[in-house]
Amino acid sequence: MLTPEARNTPPTDRRASRFMSRLAGASLAALAAVSCSDQPAVYPPLPEPTQPPAAEAPPVTPPGPLYPSGSACHSRQMDGPAIVEAIKPAVVRVQTDLGSGTGFMIASPRSDDLLIATNHHVVAEGHKFSAFVSTGAGQAAEIAGLEIVKMDTKNDLVLLRAPRLPGLPKGLYLNADGVKIGQTIVAVGYPALTGATKFELSFGKGDVSAATIELNDRKFVQADLPLNPGNSGGPVVDSCGAVIGIVVATLKKVERVQLVVPVAALISLYDGYVAPRPPPEAGVRARLGAFEKAIKWRQGDEAAAFFTESFLESVVVSDLTRTLRKFESHMDEYDAALAQQGIGPDAPLALRLAAMEKLVPPDELDALMTFILLKKGVIGEHEALKSYLSTWISDVFGDFQSLQIDEVTNATETSATARITITNRRGPSLWQLQMVYKAGDYQIDSLKCVRGC
Image (tube, rainbow, N blue to C red; front, side, top):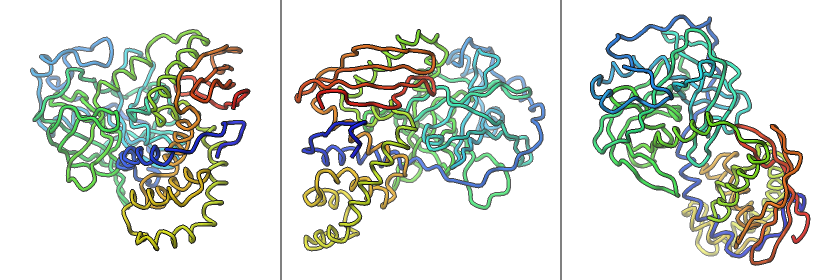
């Protein structure tokens, strides 16, 4: 498990059951397919985009990215092909050094900003980000050097920014009016198809089958839509071309049923981006207050999102690797013990995990769960690290009672040091945190238990 520099020694009872209770959440993340593909060719600079007929252009320019009103939309409804032509210039393929997905430009009152929305899982494991925009005839041009400026890991959303370039469209508007069951919707994206030689947009038309459903404390719009791998992060629009949601996942074994993140989550993320940034110390305290809420409500996955990628890649990777090596040396022994109980390698995953809980030493259990989920393809490497860290957070701060911010020092626009006291049934413990400002928020880059661990 994590070193004393990063953690204390947690209790082990109920750990596996907590891990297994998050299995559904891990499975949901795995549903959102992002296919790796070859880097698209880089083409000449963007030409001036072809303007749609005046009747299809937004009737007014709102102060922000919201659509002016429902009545304005009703006066200019389009059919499927017209919708695609109207929004196509603003839909992009998001490419990272490890994979790709779809994204879209959103209208912003900041004339010097180019903002692109996509799923967080599309960019989560990448380090370099680009967007490719159609220039017609199956060709594309690259917008390089995108940076993450705001993210919402709970709703799997992220905003990417680059300087606005000449010739790019203003972006899509966001319709905050909500959706109705049976409403006609359109989803577009750039599918990651092996062997594809042209940069072609895919189009799917369907309807809203459930205006709101909840899965693992997350809200979705359920839609009946045909989609392809690589559509993750793409816009779902109404008959006026305004965004009502973002593609995130397909329910396996249920043909055409898609989960769509409601546009309200993106509007909230955008509002957070354009809001004035508070003074550094106030920003740190607000962030720690949000961290406290995630711990209080036992939202380990959400709490894990408060840590930097460098923390994952150093402390968590090192600890997980060390524990996995210890576990793998006993794998044959565990398989034999399971076989004696009539539980073979093809047995249901939940059954194997429950049986393993009785066989595996507590200090190896988290790594075991992660290893099996990885091996079964339920989660990828990044999700595995987040899940491992999430379980650790739940263990360390289990039976949580309070978080007190003792002091914030050396607070700047880029970093800060904080000391907090965590109190649970085991008593108080003092922790020192190093925080850095990344992706629009302060994140925990290191933590050390100073006393009471």
